[in-house]
Amino acid sequence: MNVIIDPETGCWWAAQLEQEVHHWWQILWEPGGQHLTAYFRGHWEEGGVYRKGRDPHELWPLMRDIQNKARQRAAVEALPVPPVLVERLPDTLWNAIG
Image (cartoon, rainbow, N blue to C red; front, side, top):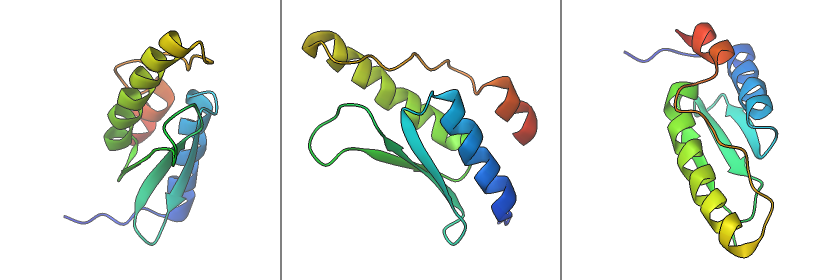
């Protein structure tokens, strides 16, 4: 079943996610593609990194994986360390999505 997500909900998801990760990611809702796109703002290889997910449930583990890798790199190279992302979505988003 293909559920169409309205732009207001998608933008709210993006804003909430960006706030939860302390703006280490720029997160956009793409209404045409019906997905979230998250661009990592921390140190990474040339060209950067981004991840896409249809909703926060799908995107969160992808973002968490990148942040864990960035934390490992930061420890080795003495770079600013991104915060640890918890296993589960923050309650605000978890309750809103269900």
